[in-house]
Length: 320
Image 1 (cartoon, one colour):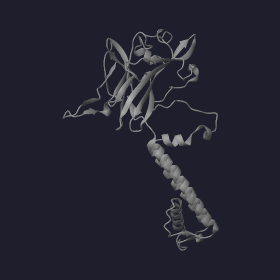
Image 2 (cartoon, helix red, strand yellow):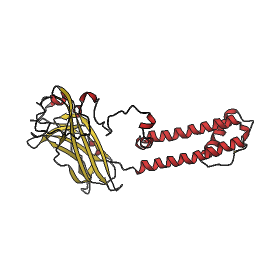
Image 3 (cartoon, one colour):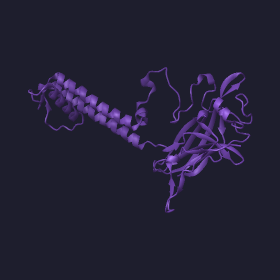
Image 4 (cartoon, one colour):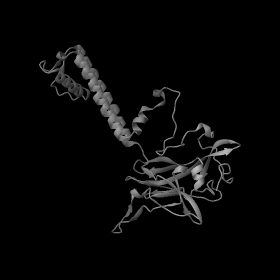
């Protein structure tokens, strides 16, 4: 059993981790499961500290499409209200005998046609104010669609590491001892080559009576592979040089620690290097487990079948 103050002395702490050392100034985990830093930035106006382009590129697809649709509906509602305020008599093609709701609806669809520069010609503006407003709306529509097109292209063309990590890290039998293991796998029709992995352990340890964050580079059995077509299990052998040496289930329950995983690989489709990362707190480490194999032969022995639904599956085992 390892103590919080007596972490293996043979393990050398990394002084260039990029994370602070003062444990009392840190809240929660260092990196979220989705790979983003668990940091909230304050002290500056929101419009100065947020890149709206990056926000629109990174947000989920359903939210992005929702914002585009909401903007389209809202902007046409605003212009329709202005047309209605100027007067329906300045829009030829709208009958004065129609109800106000019908007139507003027709003004809304005229706005949509003007904003998209479709212009069916059923309704046309008359008078200076209405004509100037429709001209301004057409210009805004052109600029808005140019921005939306750029965002769509940016989302589709952004190099992305389509890799999924196992929900849990495990402590598994390895040789005559044990090892820390994390599994990952590509999940789309991409070709990854020259994959590199790095694993870092961050722990809050007592040092001279003060809690401090210490970071250790974890040596991997294999940190580079030529091709990443199937699953890849990252293995850190727990030897005497490992900071996890002599850790047992109780240590993982009591010590505040986090395992940071960094992956960098070359994507043939984008012809670019892509990167991703994730982390596992000690609460997400399963002590005494073994991953279930993800791939097998096809029934006709002509292909290797990769079962992505088995990425997180493991069997419990006893450790000596």
